[in-house]
Length: 336
Image (cartoon, rainbow, N blue to C red; front, top):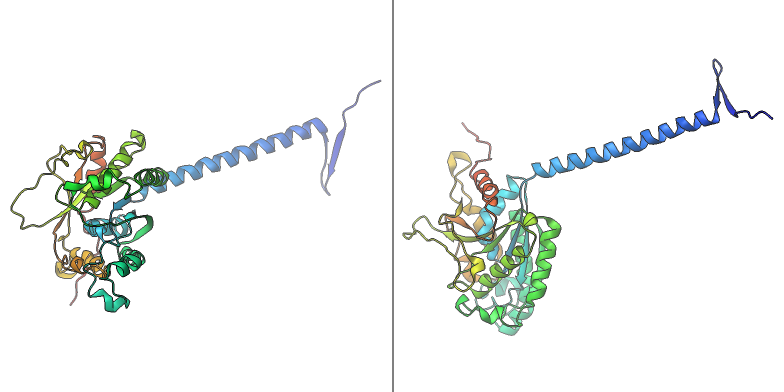
């Protein structure tokens, strides 16, 4: 008995084709592999384009603060990152800010509440201050707000910082773990904190130290650069050098010169405007904080100290950022 190969006949009005089934199977396999390879190629191409696109985007920054108005320290820098460099800035707020009731006198008519009464202030200020923060954030261009909802118990200087770091007033492990999750998920380039010092609010220094501890717990290859921010004036007679906060070696800084954003850099017609205007706009949103309003037009420079826990290689990236922040991106216009 002679075996014969089956075949399939295709016909058109002009052409007849006889194909053996095994040959047809080979053609179908070739088409299948071609389609798979094409899909893989386009997938790789998409990944490549996304990577190139992400590299073209500006820096990603997480600002970690204790109170809803502390972000004013970084306002000029953050504004320029989001508006001129195509970057993103998020805020992680640790406390609810309810401890700021003592100077809410002028805001009582605005909100229709006796906010200077401690019980009333502590009840209503958390929600009020979050809305103020988000209103200011809209001006700056903040993308996300992360609320940790810790207690703003009272004002205490960093000389008594153990009242925070050696107690259960805050859920310290929750703060560290949540910060780490956010930082690792979002893959930030930079983290900004208020520079920890013995003379500042213990909440500010505590948040800075907790953020430093969190960043240091992340694999060095994936860590963002963490910088300590403060504000200085051109009229300051002393050349302040930050070396760290005594008793907390994680805050150590060896570099004697900070990175600087100049709020007074000029732009617009006849160079009449500067970035102190932006800072003032943000401050004005925090109406529940009376003494905050007194800081309008205060501070010419935003200084950023490079903590020693950062890698030496991160200085180049940081320097590149602050060089870009010096550029005037506004189109120059002339009028008759």
